[in-house]
Length: 556
Image (cartoon, rainbow, N blue to C red; front, side, top):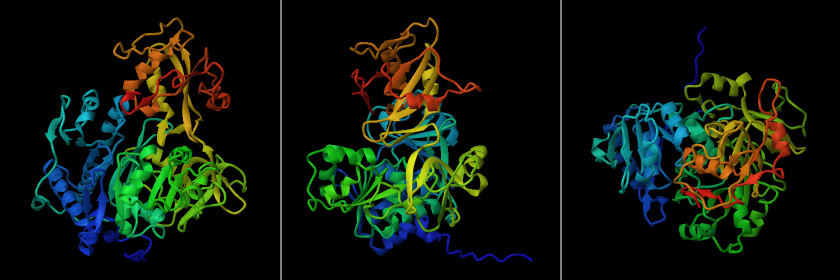
């Protein structure tokens, strides 16, 4: 007998609720003049404006060949262009692929090639980095804004706009159709593209915001739109009918002024951001601002004071790009836990063989969802990595957790070799590859060490090539007036100079230790547990203490 399936499975959201086109049109039809987005220059987009700009952008992308399913690389900083290009891509039925604006060198080249994208949208200041790498299958680079651009091998287009009437409505999209591929750093190789559906993004938004924020709220979008956190914030306010205040990023000294000026009522802060605000003596008293709700990730014993200090409700939250906010705390929890799993999520804490461990014992957090399509589809072009992460019917987070006596879940540590610094995920494999590209280095192992503000800092442990000179392949244009960190024949300042143009600034290690041999397992793999336990030793060189501080523009 053939089973008859109910096409209206209540666990799967309707396309009208979660797919961008129908969602945006419904919001505009309900109140076209309602504000959806405000920007630092005072510009406001109503819901009608947002639909119009997205439609004109979609029409322009269609002219360039952005057909349904086409992947469009969006390499843009937070702002109006990033928002309209994302929405325009999805309105055209294409797939948005936002990438980190700090990427360069081999990491940028990898993402371009791995995505298989034919179209990339960027700004003039990023074209030099693009010109320095293999463009892969890119056939069109769209440059938005004024300014000089580097010579680009693919066909270059300046600007992205077309009349609304040129827009061709694609075939209706479904909740399970792919809306984005978001690159997240891997732990066993290069960054992987997380394939996300409209239902996945919608579930993340409702899990985070529904019942906590509504049409009267404004969310501060200070997390980048190339991260899942930024995407959830922007889309979530569409879902609940609220609005967003788009800013370039987080700045401690400007935060409260921005909150007051934009009438922000909610935001997400990384733990390090909350720590900066707590230490800044210029913050307002409770009631001296409109902010009422803050998600702090991770919520720690130190940052729990944020709620009482500023008179806001604080929530802990756990998420990954692959998931949909499976754990959210109650407001103002009594302890720094992530909270309990939300409705529709099952969780297990397991040993390396997927056997559940006893409460109070640390193990890997495994998750699954009752709703179909609530988690990511998998990793783009990587069926083996997808199968490994989703084995035995559970998604393996790679994160160590402990279940408390009250049933809440506490994050303990990462069980993989990934690192997180200043809110950015870092693959140790990728950093090690760049270190090993330096001719004087024979072996390299990268591990996390405790940072000053509750997140990781990066330690590189290096074994030099015997007899190698310290300055091989150093960039003569990066000549620093500093005492060189010489150790075992390695000039560590020159090594930092070598790394700066080859990776994102946040990936460059802060700490360096040079040894004769890196300790290894019997199979020849670095004993990273030993290196982490040793941490910052007396012979470790701190580049920041030596004056080498890095930011988006390179050396500060």
